[in-house]
Image 1: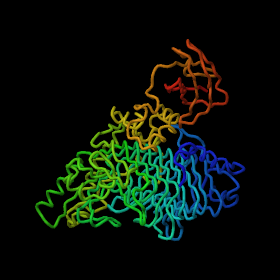
Image 2: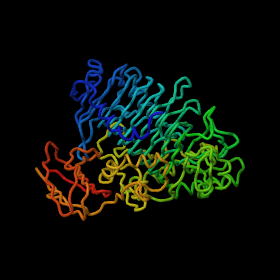
Image 3: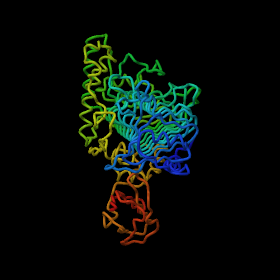
Image 4: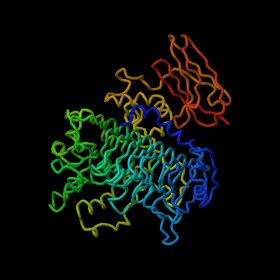
Length: 595
């Protein structure tokens, strides 16, 4: 098994290696087929650089056979849309390519806007399929919109890695079915092994499909899954659908209207489930065949927030009233992470009964259950019913549409009411995130604003940072980057208390350690700080995605007031942050560099 702490130290290093492993950079001209032609000619001998704001149409799916395919766009910001790569269609049937990426080797993508819809507005089925065993795929700072009708990322070769960081994923699945859209599929082929590393961090997922992470119903075991600081906005159904693993960390995530489709009692047990413990939850967990107990496998589900809007609660009540009046209609419920015996009964099931019939509830250690056979399986610090108060009102508008959509879909699908009692499926409300209202174009930029204002959610993570995707909070992202190794080790060690509150790490809320002037700066700036006693001082400049780009000082300083002046060097204009660490205190502030 790979070492978790090592991964937390080198994840960005792996990304950096990916981006420079080819010998030369080839700037690909904009146009239809230019990227396909360049890859066909040079294969793995070039890094393919795309121009921000440029459009690159595909004349065939993107493929690589036993070479590392690297597609890197120019840096972008809120004023500049990334380079766009758009799928094409088959001339024979006028249908979009079945898959956008047909990978048979390592893939690295950064700073790209992928559109899996052709210029006619038809959406493809699959976005990315990795067929080769034992290779890595990296997606960083990409936008994938729309994802596709069926599958987002399929790791089909066995023993694969995927590093999925700082992306926006929008529109997955179709609007006429409750049972479509699998975001991550970790091999359904019984002959292939599980994934090695699945690292999903600081992403925003909006308007996604039925199952977010799908596995093989127990035939494969994955090594390491990290799902940390992601924002989930509107999703049809399941979160973890039969994925087994050696280590699984689901931490610091924000779920808003995630499970919109109520689950019918008559569907239990779920495929691969235990008929003796038939009550499913959002978490799937089980023993592994031949496993010796107590196990040293890790399942760490801490500091996640789940918000169901009132409309979803009302829908469950309406459907259960129908079930009470007509025995032909089954009862339904929404899922918590796990039925812990204290779950809100408004989700549609008696908490005590659900706890007694939920396999996962008795496997995990939490406030009212202890299982010594699974000592490292921890559930806790979950929040329900806390509205994050998103700044973008469109999120709530589409959430209202999703409630109406779910009513039609689930009255038919879960309670088997006659379809002709409801509008035709093509007339159901559209809750997919598409500001342009046309899947063939992506003129609206930025695509979404997922900032929020709820104070508890803004400090809800294990490190008192915002829950969800930290890219929406660059100052907090910079703090997290500076401290993430210690935070990860805190979780790895099984601590459930907040990091920094029990002597493990520093208190990282912003203080008044220093000031920088002038700000904005042109060629140079000065950081001024005062020390009450001698201390070790570190000052670093950090870019907008949390990477350290300059170390100003790293040295011991005496007590008193100090001024440190630094030049911008080769830093481009734009938004940066400076971080000052004095002993066990840390502070991060904005720094604007002018042209």
